[in-house]
Image (tube, rainbow, N blue to C red; front, top):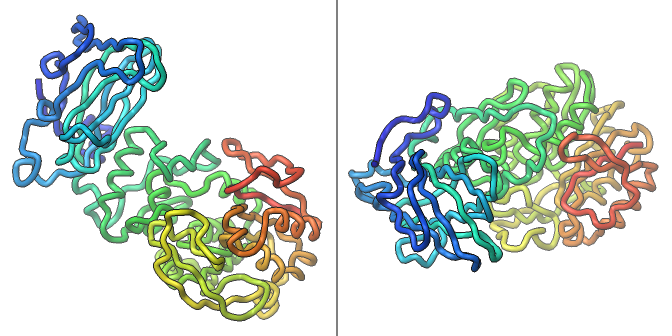
Length: 449
């Protein structure tokens, strides 16, 4: 039976149900033993060989309306929700295109004690052909029950003057938060927000932490992370929250669109200061917009890069989706990310800036400068030796190498300033002492005098 209805009340703001298939026995063809349980579930069984098909559902049965044009009201992106109880082995639910050659989405479901919902985002309903149910990776028999399949539209959810805030906006840290950059976040809300972000065509503000607003920009992976999770590097922000008190002074080097700048401004209060550096004209414009949106008079912006002295340098500007990887190095730190522009930017030494502004207090510095951490620290030598600020430093070996440095040089430099190194534990977020940076990469470390 195909039913069309609205979402349950708690989900009503995030999508419209296009169709529901409850009586799967009418639509699913199975090559192996199957039967309909008394509770209406459709049972599937696989043979022992890996990736053997157990059942298939033609997409036309689930959504028997025209695939394009007026009949489907322009629906494009959608989310498939399947409620399954796997009793043995692992079942794979795979969505393939009309030719059956290309995978459009997949979820591998492990065994469990009760039925659970699983989700597959679909970028374009016009491409969908079938839903295939088979056993998961590795040989072994699998069997379970499929209770229902729902299809939810996400059309038009980004058409607003302000984006609906994420429900996840509470520090401290969230374990494995970095999964929001990839396909790993798996709640229904997460998938809907990812699909909604993909619809975004123009920058829109969203309510954020500590009463702030932040502008969510299309295509930006950082903005997608903030929109989906409501947070940005929450373990690091939780550490910063412990360091900065009202009246504190904070330097944000590599401020990007301003996530840490905005957050720090709420921590230091009206009598504190945030001094931010962002050399890229594109990202500086976003930073400036976010600071203006929140009316933060305690923030000072500098369209410069922190370095070991004043001068000019060439900045490689990455494609907008990877704007956080702009670098002063010889190449971008990640393969596959394109350079869209090379711009000449100004550099300055932090010692010089703080001397000119007669700043005699500095509580913390965040250095996320894509490989130029060493020259930035060299340009802050006097400050580090006299004011002893806490440091939050990104460690990215590839970025360091493209700037002519290494993790070993970075460690030697920090220890030469009599700083001790600490790892931020992902889930707590406690600090654990680091004996050596050997084996560490793509993490933020904390350095304390």
